[in-house]
Image 1 (cartoon, rainbow, N blue to C red):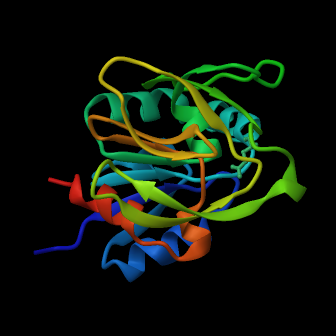
Image 2 (cartoon, rainbow, N blue to C red; image 1 turned 90 degrees about the horizontal axis):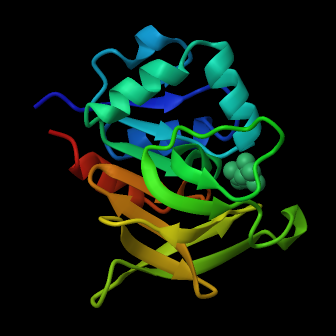
Length: 193
Ligand code: GLN
């Protein structure tokens, strides 16, 4: 079986850590910087960084519509931190002019756990009763403040929702790629095919 090829949006933010983690799980990777980089992908990661900058760059590089098309056609996607903000239907406190893709029916509040100095690691219970422990890093992390119909809550931190799934779209507030936590990326790879 040929390994899946996972695109990592490579415009800004923590790109290399996702590439490393995906490759450690046996996936091939490709940086996505232009629309044609989306062709033939099996899954996609939208990394953390600064969501308003990533938003601006996706529009500047002509990637907004191609991303909407790819995700709309069912490409499995994982958005982490700023990537979750990019996926969300609603941003409570956007930067001036900031837009999101609006493909995941949640509202998010940016920087909901405080500033950079409030960055923290935590172990989360992931996915219901027999929950797996997921090691997570929170860096200026958003929280999910509204969960739409058909959106499943996968994890909470300090009583706020920090991981959701809707169909083949996964959105998480935190950075598993910084703690070397493989399970979320493994779940993305499990959605392929
Ligand atoms: N607070 C950042 C934003 O609004 C996200 C931080 C992150 O991705 N680590 O984009």
